[in-house]
Amino acid sequence: IDPSKIYISMKNISKKLSNVKGNICISLGNIASQYKLLILHFVCKYTYRFDKYLNHLEDSRKVLYVKDDKRSRALIEKLIKQLSIVNGNRDFQNEPANIINPESFCEYSQRLLRGVDVSVNIYNDKQLKKMGLKMISEMGKASAVKPRLLEIKYSCSSSSGCKNAKTVCIIGK
Image (cartoon, rainbow, N blue to C red; front, side, top):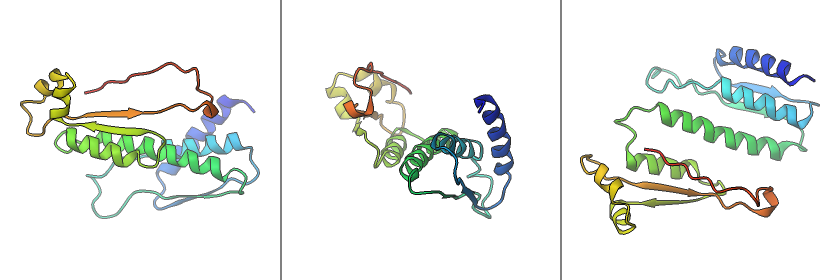
């Protein structure tokens, strides 16, 4: 099967699904596992919509029901968990600045990462100064909400195949 044809087909199907009102039920049947994951990825990606502040009359969130055999259930559950985190981050980045501040950012991130194989540390203003990170503290001085630093650590296990992976550091404001 040509992956580019699958990509175009799934993108078109997913766009049509984004206009569906209500829940979506997908029966994946006897498709190879990698294609099941690809289908779910596209459905979750292209049916995403941030309309939290536009639609107060009805909940436009879709619930995705997946009918599948037990063999690929664990893979599908893992993918859905990952995609819910991705869509949670999309919601987060679409929130206005008066909603997202250092405190709410850290709380939201901690909730979002609950149950994920990472450790989360949140450092407050006093801890930042003690660590010698005074610039972060100085930058946040003018704000009504004191600065925070969110540290997310993923410890690679040898079973996950990333034993020799390089360390990556992502810093954002």
